[in-house]
Length: 493
Image (cartoon, rainbow, N blue to C red):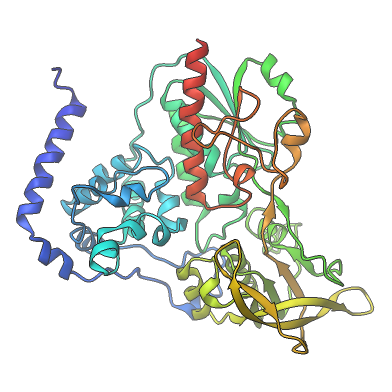
């Protein structure tokens, strides 16, 4: 056997992990309380659009939390991770103060660790599968906090490592859209030796990471470092390029591209189709957040303004609704209100985001639903009629179905309404490829194992397939598509 650097490193890791198990007994590990993430003061942070709420763990906090990890023989936490991070491996590196090694372990399967450590719903995925939750009925190891710590430590150290990239095979492939699915796909494909170009319609790379998530949750500078790492690995980025308009698929094939990964997202906002919904001052969350996050609408020096108001209502209960309502608060709203037709228990938003919103003074009108909007003589919305709801039996989503309470309507004044009730797939790519099979909802139909579409050289993932999902699920799609496309192209070779 050739004793490569990788082999020797893995042997060393196995040895010190065994030593750590002997040094600290399991009872001692389980007695350590879960760490709390340090945060900015709610009153101060509610005035800051571009300052992050969570401030990150200290080294001592990270080491203490890492000691809680049992390094299970069968780590179920990995099963809960859509991109299959070796979670015990990176955490045990933190426990023994090898923070840079922890970051390297993360990047074996995750192209965006600093992003995922901030916005992924770990409580529903890897942490939900943690031994502490499954067996001990205790709080899970704070996997997300530790992922963020390792990624941030590496960035701030200036010693950023890049994953190993195979020798170029000369095969050109394209990724359409530059959101998390495409970035995960591009990272895996460039590591495998492919010539990867990511095409983005907008003027900034990053997709929903840039236009959809406010900087108080995910700073653009953090995203930019991850993007720069991919560029250093060899991924090429083309901005202001709309595949299907700027160039057709046939054009790209003539340019030498052999296969395509479509991850154009779900940018078509949904509305409720209720009376008055077309009044001025009623926006989709997509438009509102894109204007603020990507087009600097909140800055007086930019010519891309967004409507401001004292009374802002956001309709919806997901993460996008929380992002919108908290953004409105930061832009000066005196009352920033969530209207959601189910109870808090059924809210799909992350628990952390709901708690942060409450701390910042956001009002919640749960079990309420808009039924009509009103406007002044100029057509600007100035009121909303709400109907009280109660919960019935569970519907197809598994959540209890909201039922209207007759005669419970009442009106409240409002200056701006932001509708955040979901999105539909971007129709551009399907319309450019009539032979592409799509569902009745407009999502691209794919093989769930390979992410290959009805057109063999086209693969797809993320919201254009799911119709709206989390960053990490989109990244999982990207990784599966990379494996599927590699197998397909190699079989042709």
